[in-house]
Image 1 (tube, rainbow, N blue to C red):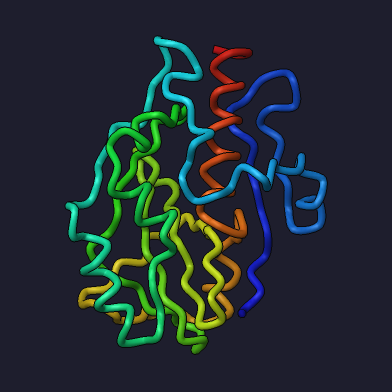
Image 2 (spheres, one colour):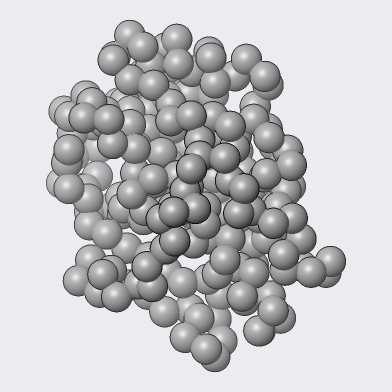
Length: 201
């Protein structure tokens, strides 16, 4: 698997250490996550954990056969969506349980994005910033890895399975690895936003 630089920008701004940015060297200082909870069912995702007032991300689930359609296309490349990702992206209940201090939006792209760096991987966009300042992708590698990565750029090809026209070095500089899996990403994003609304808003 290609090595992306790791990065995490803690949710929001304010006291209590919120708003800190962890670069590749500082990434290991992030608080560890409760690995035992990550069973692929999202049982830990408590609805309205931040209370009744905060902004909760509007659900935008894929249709029931949506993940199957993706997997049929991915199968041609020896890839498949992780089950936890397919479950979450098809569920209104799960999606609307996540608060966002920056009004993020769930939006799974209908297009697969072929990696432009020759590693035979594909990207699936699943979230974006409301103002187009950031885009979140699931990276699907041939080795079975599926980390979450993000970029300030939208890599939307004109046709399915087309690679973006960008130099490899520029692509690697632009894309950051946020979490080793989708469930890891959702948990850290969820709990930080719950904390932000409780402590700052």
